[in-house]
Length: 208
Image (cartoon, rainbow, N blue to C red):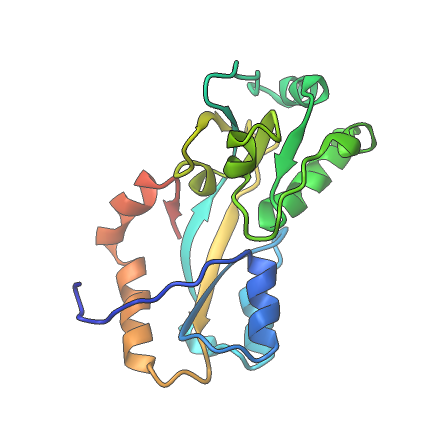
């Protein structure tokens, strides 16, 4: 609305997006989440898929916890409390994307991954964890805060405690093959400008 450009958005998990672009799919602007500190944006730049000078950090998000609406909230006040809550839960869910990769490593560090892996609910690629929780297929769900807030039928419990928290950085750049350089550049500027900050925070994100 601000620029007169129409933006069409295609959503998916970052690993899926990376594979699609690497395989030759086109898009004007690509936004990806880092995986355990590994920048998928940098990988696509190295492959020549993104313009290096266009790289931008759009937002950051921590991992949050949710339960089905009306369910009792688990104690997530400390690492030990999170561990006990996970062990006590009948089922848990985490994403097939960036936060899910981190969750596996977190559960391994807590020493409980082998104990609970049989009760991890299936979450399809690009599927919000909150929807799995809302359907009652998982008692506790873990996903980026920004991915949980929009989902209906769940209660957002809060973020993981600092000692377990992982901050995901969303970065990206302009596709090297785009014919809409001006429009893509305008979108990058719009998303990273100060007026965008209140909207980011409203949706569980922090500015980059």
